[in-house]
Amino acid sequence: MTGASAKILLVDDDDSLRRVLEFQLTGAGHIVVSESDGREALKQYSNEAFDCLITDWRMPKMTGSQVVQQATAINSEIPIIVITAFGDIDTAVDAMRGGAFDFITKPFNRQEILLTVEKALKYGNALAENRRLRRQVHEEFRLENVVGTSEKMLQVFDLVERVSKTNVTVLIEGESGTGKELIAKGIHSSGTRRDNPFVAINCAAIPETLIEAELFGYKKGAFTGAIGESKGKFEEASGGTLFLDEISSMPLQSQTRLLRVLQEQEVTRLGENTPRRIDVRIIAATNENLTELIKENAFREDLYYRLAVVPIVLPPLRERREDLPVLTEHFVARCASKYGIRSPKVSREVFKVFFEYAWMGNVRELENLIERMVVLSDGDTLALGDVPENVRNPSSTKNGLWFDLPSEPIDLEALEGEIIRTSLLQHGGNQSQTAKHLGISRSALIYRMQKYGFE
Image 1 (spheres, rainbow, N blue to C red):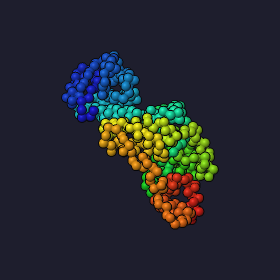
Image 2: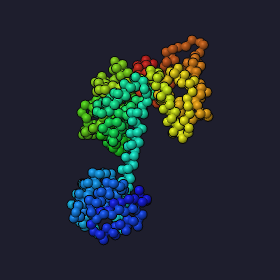
Image 3: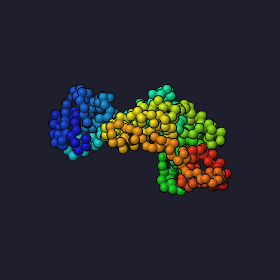
Image 4: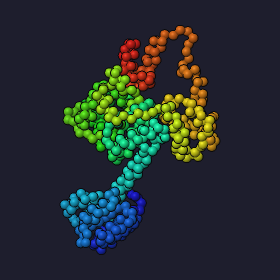
């Protein structure tokens, strides 16, 4: 409420000082309710909404210490300013420990009290905004927003609800686009760590040489380019949840260090020798079969068992087609609300096409398609003509191939090698991103790179 009228409760048994303060605060545009007795003030405080409380410390019937203690118990987010005697430092310290935001010593002038009130109001506004944002985050990521009524999704919801009540490590498995991060956020926002950070890191999007610096942090000079010290994601997520997305893309060396962090519950920044204690819940996710990667020596078996204390498997959309109607209606309504337009109906012909489509991009593909259709549609109903051609008639696109097959004989191995080389160039040599692009595991990519002599 800085710069606007605030409602302030003033408690002071000194009538003359109370009147002066009331005059000064009212003159600054604030609404002031004043009381000479702390007990009467607390009655007002319990029944009305105030933006700030100002109380004297030394009062005969009820001390300022008692006022602060009881007011904080009623509402700990309303800033309290304590008026103390000049030089009474011990009193000021006791007031701050008891829950007061700040103190001001007698005698003080008008400018001092107004500046102190302004700081208190800014603090109260920040607390209120944080509370609003927490409510918004909880609303956005609550489990009810993961839509589905199929038997498979009901089983997922039941499992998610149960693990949310604990701090157990969770491994979420599922194809790209099935909603793994949304499930992870739902677990976090429904659990005991909801008011602490949710930090996500995509292990496939970070170069191998930097992933340990991102996870564990580093000190200045630890490596070329480390011009200052930096917290890692583990430290950033302290008290909250660290979401390790695409964990299958993590290099083996980093997997070893991650395993040690999980076992010891402490992390050592690059370039340092002293470990730091951490308190972090781990949720990992993968779109690859980790047990197959273990067989290929591309993923540590002991790390897998450390992460998969509770595995949650998200079914692809094609295996829960009965959820298509409710998902479609959900995305249509959300898109219409997002763009401030009327929510269109969905025709039977559209649903028929949706039921026959493969949905290789899963729920994310459906959401993006619905948004495109709603924005571009001119009518009150999404009709067959609003569905893109590749969805309406997927078999019509180049016989299912994304390139033209020549009529003359081809060298299949040379073609495979060229595809791998081109993909590596497109992704700057990043093996994890290339493997994802080609739909194979990183170890399978390395095998083929060695086969074709690629470095």
